[in-house]
Length: 77
Image (tube, rainbow, N blue to C red; front, side, top):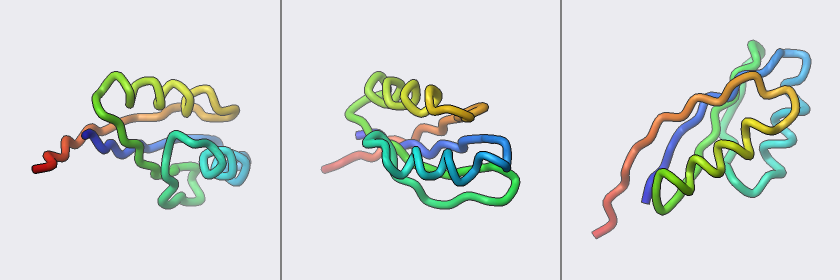
């Protein structure tokens, strides 16, 4: 299983709208944001391909300027 953190960037005037969209979508978990328009979320997937599909959904949200992903692999034993 992969867990990836993503920094989503938007214009500060749209921060509340984008945060609401992220909280309401089924592909990520919202964690925090700041007044500069940076939003921290995480996504999970069985592999990188599944995560990339979720990233495309996030990138398609109106007013999202960028979404940069960091991949961390979790080993379940």
